Amino acid sequence: MDIKKFSSQLEHNANALKSRAILFTKDEDDADDLVQDTLIKAYRFLERFQDGTDFKAWLFVIMRNTFINSFRKKQRWSAVFTPQSEADNNLLYGATSNQAERNFAGRDIAAALNRLPDSYRVPFVRYFEGYQYQEIANELGLPLGTVKTHIYQARAILKKNLRKYREDLPGT
Image (cartoon, rainbow, N blue to C red; front, side):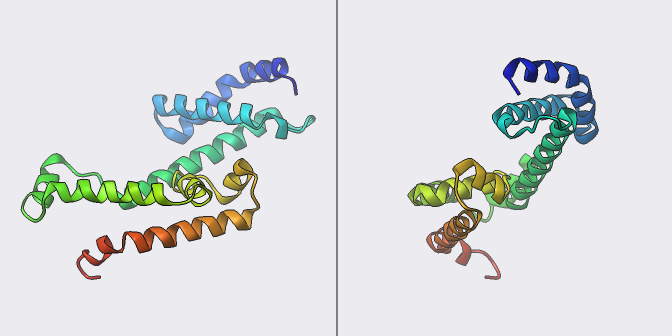
């Protein structure tokens, strides 16, 4: 499909995309972001679109997958970082630990990530951002098994390098 036809198809399906995005997100601003992400991915993977298939359905599949990946990413983040009020933060850290400890931990995590070889760090970060193994493999042009191995190795290295933080946790 050429870019002119692609643009025409996007214009034709813009309202349907926005309506579907609102159903997913329940928020107009988030829906706009989802539509934008969908359009970027559609353009990026335009060469994968097969002529003769339903363009609107193809866009909806991209949108659904983008929404699901975003949801998974938010779940991962919330599992690691639970939002709290400022008062809860002060109570949690004020009496029991120094605020600087968190800063050191953040720097240590960033440093440990930066020490990873690019071949491990890039797939690991992509996975942590919510991308699926197959998407990472396609993006990096690597076999699926290699991507899974690199992510596994990155986790093992990070776990080893950040062991001191795990040992400091109560009940470990």
